Length: 503
Image (cartoon, rainbow, N blue to C red):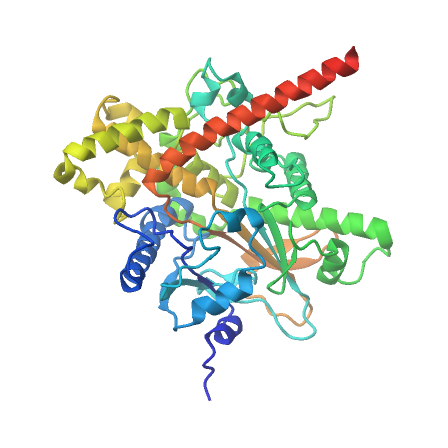
């Protein structure tokens, strides 16, 4: 007899159902939560189709099929959303709940969902199948979800005379002050995205250790698909890793063993993040064009001028808590070409403007559209997301052939900004399982080896690649002003406190 319970079926198939958040319809014009349920259901389904199209036509060519899986759309039965709402209501943070008018996470009109493999398990991306061994004697599968955020400081901030703060401090570190001011987190994170994206193993270790101390919503660890360590579920990381690694090979116990296992675990994550898949060759042409379109200016104080195919040298955030060796300093470093972080960083760098420059372009577009509705319809700002209308602007360099005062230039830059925002808000899923003697490994390319010689099968996937609503630029603009103000006020308070102490 077949299984009829959709939730049980979802668990047994090791699949993830992504449901539309309440009131979120990819920014499509005409959507309104007050509309009739049937009409909202139609909008939700269309928004999911737009999401699939966006991932297929824009994000996958730039990030490569070695890291991106195109979701499928599946109809869900009546009552499914209510059951899910009940299951997850205790998980949502208080900050997230107060943002919703009726405290709902999922729109009850939802009748379809995006379906993906459960990347909490090691997954073969060529077949989208789970390859984690689930027998009773197998080692557990550990997955690490990292939301790396923006990994660079844009040229406009570096070259701006009016904002010395933004020239030296990354957006994530500045945003921490605003979140503290708003009471969203009780403890400020010492994680800095520029350290993770540096390609320097010491800086990357520091970044990952910082995430373990203050995960916030940037780190989540699951064991066999069950959340075991995060900001809201801080289990015993030592016990989790002890099960993951098995018996100690060197006889260390207690604190020393935990310290060694945490370090080994972090090194394995770094190995996965720096891994270059052989399949990346299939999309090298798009990546080369991306690198050419992301050229840095001659006067950039952080990134020297380079050839189109050369790696991006790392930047340094003045707010980072990483302390370099006083004897060696911070040596220039870069990410291996086509590793997952390199792919994400280059898509992020499609937008070298600050929001203060993007917002006027957005306003120019809105004013033009109000008087040229038919003429502007081919821009597809709200979808459909085709290669011609969205991927092409990302692969071309608008600085070289467009009139900066023209409307086409504004449209191109806004699209690049929104695609960049997708990459800034994406997440990376790294799943690992130690290979036991009785396990058969078909793909030797997807195997990591730790310092003790133990081997692990693994997978790396980029998720949360939703299109950003164009009209959200207004919110980004307001938010940026609040971020800079909060950070500046915090710096003034710190300076005042230091003056009091010294006097």
